[in-house]
Length: 345
Figure (cartoon, rainbow, N blue to C red):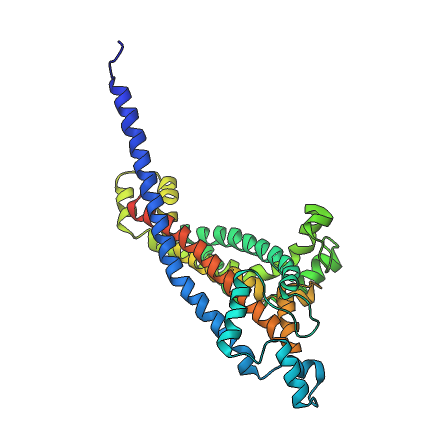
């Protein structure tokens, strides 16, 4: 009958309004988490840039010393430093450098006069490729191991996985890398022993072939930490009241695990990943040497050895930015997962 509102229509309207309200609440939580994270990370980034820029003054290094040697005259040193703007007050130098950083300009190398942003970009692409694959491998394997240990806690499987994670965590990546090269590159010939082929040049196959072994070597620590943290979080989540309530209500074990335990117990593992990814990018110097990769870590090491302070400052700024950005993402994910777990959704 025209103009008649049925019970089904009312239910549909109420359902849509309920979904809209839940969506607004979820968006509000994300915005609050984002605002809190930005309020923390922006001052941290600013203070870190001040400390980073102070490196030149603390190191006593100068482009004149690099270009002219230790026997340079004071007049020659003054001329070179004035060309680089090092005769200006510290705060003026910092502000010029910081505004350049905000616009993506990291300065010029003291050693070869090249643009540091370009140099870092070339190495960062290699390191990001390896680090991303290492993170994926570490998370997937660690997730499987941590989940299996938690579901079979107290059994031989739990003890075996815990022991494996302990052994893997103390194995240096370069040792794992040497073993991988000897077995899978030299012995079996399944992978190339070194080098890097960009995704745009060799396609997905060659790109993956060149980064798989270094990624596996770097993933060992991620596997161990993810497995241990996830196991601890899941075992703790099984003891929470909302999980016990779900068991009392007669929900299936699968539903309890995926809807309640997993979302409530993955917080520690996610928090660990907040520092793992930037560390993978920046701490892979030895691994890059083993596999012949001209990556971000190797560039940082070479710049430090050459006394190229602007390049080292650029490396530190990029590393800080990666730590801040990745932790911001992790905080957003945690802000979305943890409330849902507490509500028992």
